[in-house]
Amino acid sequence: GKNICILYMFGGKKMDSTTKEMVLTAYDDTYADACAQGHDHDTAHKEGVTAAAMCLAAVAGVQDDEARKQVIALNLGKSED
Image (tube, rainbow, N blue to C red; front, side, top):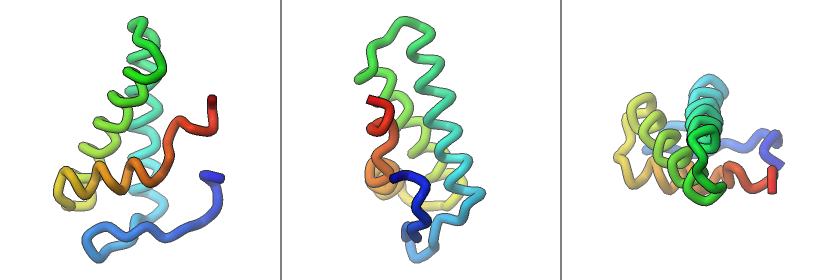
């Protein structure tokens, strides 16, 4: 599951636990906000992934499309279904 310790690579740097926590929080907060605004799961999930990728790009200094790929690889929101 999501809690298994796996090293993700970002532009040659591994995502440390602090960075991963920030990315997960960005996703969770944005997903919850989108749901509160009446959006469906798919829309809320897309908004959460975008926010998480923007967070990762800013924190880790990776390109936006690489950040998005890495966030998608985390399979966020899939275990709640």
